[in-house]
Image 1: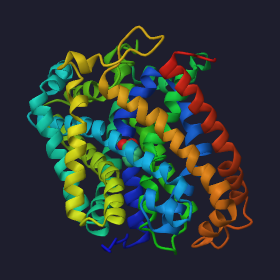
Image 2 (image 1 turned 90 degrees about the vertical axis):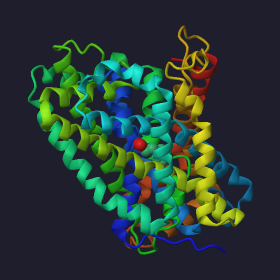
Image 3 (image 1 turned 180 degrees about the vertical axis):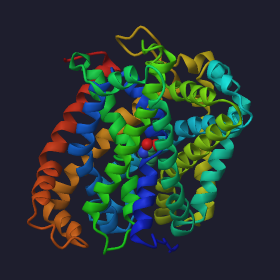
Length: 463
Ligand code: PHE
């Protein structure tokens, strides 16, 4: 049996799990989803989902992982419910899909480090050409995947933990500095209004579906990433408080990313907020502009530093995405860790190629599918993101909490959660989590899953 390793300290686990959560989802995904989803109304839904539904899912995932010390498939087997290991398999599949497109975006961010370093702020106007240069961005993506594989091959405390501890705080400081700067720009307040004052007439089933998908994606839930990380956690760890910290850190960074982007869009558009709904390219177009307004060497240094840190945030997430299938192969198939890492990383890179080509280079992948009831075609990358983030992750989360409460049973979950949290039993939090894990989350997630499938894939909107 290969040795599994583990986190060396309490802080190490929290930083690694927060590192998994904080990534492109917060800085790239969140602002663009807010932009497309009607501003503050989306933000409100997102916040509700994170705290009310996702936090209980997170606690449950970590508890299952720590109890079993296994990968997401092995965990269900170890609890004695082999029939349920399809949930773990589905999670591994989602992880494959997510990493395949995530790595493409990470490759863009990586490429931007160079563009900023040479002071090419005008790339903001040439973003579509940049992503169509598939050999260049493909090479960046390949380098990014190789870096991820290298970190994962170093094992838990050696690679993942060390990197996360130092880089996460640096990113936070950098974001705070940029927020401070962008708030001083003219028309910044128009951006903030769009971002913070909700107009609930903008709520639709689509906004709800996207907000839930974004919450799951951003918190790394529903695919067993936190079952896997939980499997490396010490029994003395307080899971409920660790999960609260991770959730707050993740939501906090996403909210700050919005404070960084929207004032800038207010500034660039002279207050009209034009271009706010531009989609996946949003940060790649707006951020170079902010560094451009700073200008000169200083702008180049700030821009380079920012994209370096963004790459590290992405790296601590790609590492957790790769760790899931790797842990599965190491535990269940008894393959050596280093070999498992390179095999899986190579396969995922190849699966990502259509996502790389679908941004204008290949017509076929750029207009991959037209959903029923929609007039415009969706590109391959967005399609995979819809399938994985908005559909599979909430379904996975729904099944995980249902399983924990009704198959594995609540008292076992409570027992696991009270290790490291002596006051947990009998607390209000315990009552809430029992209710949320047992009823609220399975019901709401199950319901939204049905709406999502009907709306996205069949064009039936029941609202
Ligand atoms: N949470 C990560 C991000 O926001 C992405 C991720 C999803 C990582 C699922 C692991 C599992 O960037």
